[in-house]
Structure formats: C-alpha cells, structure tokens
Length: 119
Image 1: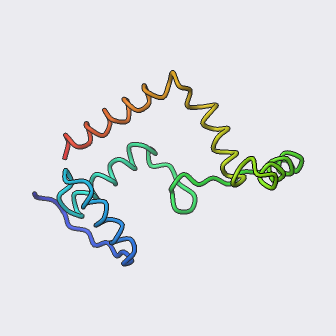
Image 2: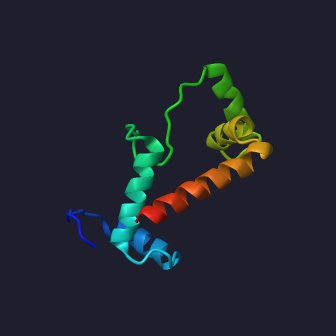
C-alpha cells in the first residue's frame, strides 16, 4: 500500500486496547488498518465537528436543580444505579424507538461496509 507515513504516540494501555480489538476482529489485519478505518469512521460520523473531552459520547448537561434532586432521589431509592443511567434511558426512549432500531442498525452496518470497501 502506498501512502504517506505519520507518527502516532500512544500509551501502553491504548496499544493494549487496540491489540485486543484486532485480536477479536480477524477482518482487521494490523494497527495501521484499524487506524485508517477508525479515522475515516470518526470523520464521516462527526463531519469533523469538535468533540468535548475524550470524544466518546460525553456531554455536559445543565439540569434544573429540582430535576437533579428528583434524579438523585431515584438513585438513592434504588430505582437506578446512577443519574447517568436515567439520562441514557430517557435519551434512548426519545431517539431509539423499537420501530427505528433495526433501521438504524442497518444504516450503520451499510456505512461500515462502505468504509471497508474503500480500504
């Protein structure tokens, strides 16, 4: 494969994650291939938008004090494990209906196949 070479420094923990991922995905032959796939997927998914923090779907939310108190009370009473669990459940109910879930999965699968085909 021809192309320009780049240098990327990673911590040992990151390299272990990468190697473990490659080990479980025989369709990916090496770190470079995974990096190319991941970079393309990230850029295509986010359109180059800036991400906050690690870029792993983390958001900072400002919640009204009364709502925050209710959620914290539900955690204290054992209805949820964390406030984050409450927020994620609410978002899933709003954005990922059962009718929509299969369509979303199919779209993501097709995008992944297109990316792999370009490699």
